Image (cartoon, rainbow, N blue to C red; front, top):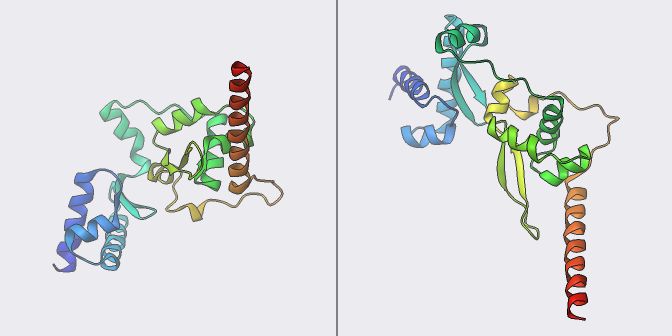
Length: 203
């Protein structure tokens, strides 16, 4: 497949899929190495920019997505009668920042930093596809761990987490190791309490 046809093929696929798709998946499906796929996609992005197309190609980590340009967002909403999303609350921004800069993290890790229950906020961020489950920690109870999504990168106009601005050096952050140690301690305390209660019932 020549470069021109490959570019047209990739554009058609990205348009049809309508969501971020991995380079590896494109490479496997088109039987073309990933380096070539990335090179052609970059050329496609430049071509769209050069002719001031209403759509642009976004790189979201190891994924790519065709999207309408932000300057046309309101016009698109008007035609499709889409209501503007409700802005994130300060609490949601705080939780999102903690996850973005420390991921993958557990809910208890986020709550240790904020000092309050974050179940509702994290559920809301999951519904907005800004964060997602990334697996479980190899600890008793196997707590879920969370990280950001390609939608997070798209909304904040960055191609990768490396483009996030650095945190102020004066801020103290809990390490993941601290969070794991605290989680283990909590689990141990809960087990000890349960064992004590069982002993008292037996007596």
